[in-house]
Image 1 (cartoon, one colour):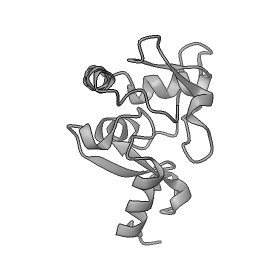
Image 2: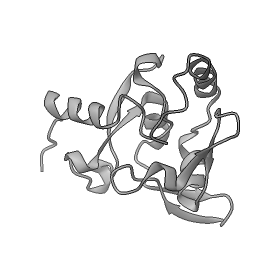
Image 3: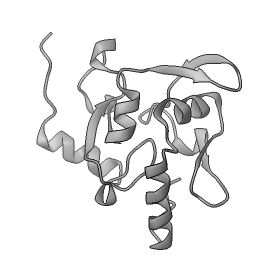
Image 4: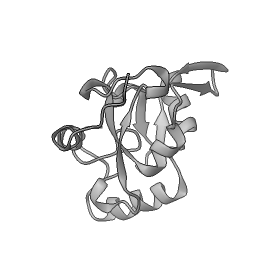
Length: 143
């Protein structure tokens, strides 16, 4: 089957649905030094479809680390588990914030594996969170 491109209208729907934040690390699109991308949650290489329920807004860092992954190693349970799926799971069910709101903490096996695989606490992201916290733009209201 030929690859279907994401329309401009679909791109805008994904951006609006995500409140202009990476659906993984929660960075704001408007303040990122990297371009944001519309990514396939289940990659095309894994038979993922180009449909709104399989698309997520991701910063370049998260998308680059995710690439074609659909599962990763949980350091606590020592097992392979699925990665967080933004269309099927609530972010706050799998992740929380450290006391200073600078680091994402994995609360479940899925959360921990996703934090590690996508490197959700990269130094550049933590620096951005510090600045946004000072400006009153972090943490996000939705979780």
